[in-house]
Image: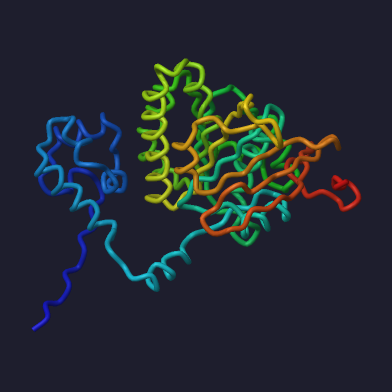
Length: 330
């Protein structure tokens, strides 16, 4: 006789989990685990660092995961679950077409390019677009914005909001902002972001830029391994948050010129294979000779073909380019 499947227990807070008392819950929060969702994607060794035994850590994580219904499933079931993945418009129909309909939730989208290529402008636009209703390409939610280069400007939010017919003050209220002063501070902010993401119903997480502090603090080959390890941990924390809260994760990345490249574009993103493997969708932004016009190249995606589209950045924000203004190939 087949047993009836037991109804899954829904745990609302850490103290609800079996074997977690107030003292242990407090230690977990100090470690950066504020919600059941974040604990469900944790590794046992992370809990052991606050004095939880390996056996207890595995039990707690297993309970948190059962609450989140994380399990083995068939591909047809996964196909149905993928219907919950939402898409966020960039503001340009051409760019959205390149991305298969816009930026996906539950994944990391990376924009990289040289100074002035439009990375931060794109982030500002996404802060506004995410607050649009879904029928207009938004997610009807707020955004968490971590700024590492002091590039965030409320003036641009006002301009972009007004162009879309939104109340700039209401838009600003739904942007949760934090400035990171060091790479450790940057990691700390993201490690402790799960509570505010849940409480504020956030579905967009932006880190602009991902690599700035790491690049300036870890100099030389002797520090490369440590830098990459920290970047790896930081990126995996970001994807955990994106999956747990069905959020779109966006990072911008600096670039460098490789001196050993003699043909083609020598521009390459910082972060090496760590960032390349963890970012699901990578877009290379660059300037064109036509003023506000920018070129976006889809470099990698799990299922979309490579390609290029043009867009422009104006006072109104990210917009499509008229046919007569598009760069001509020689």
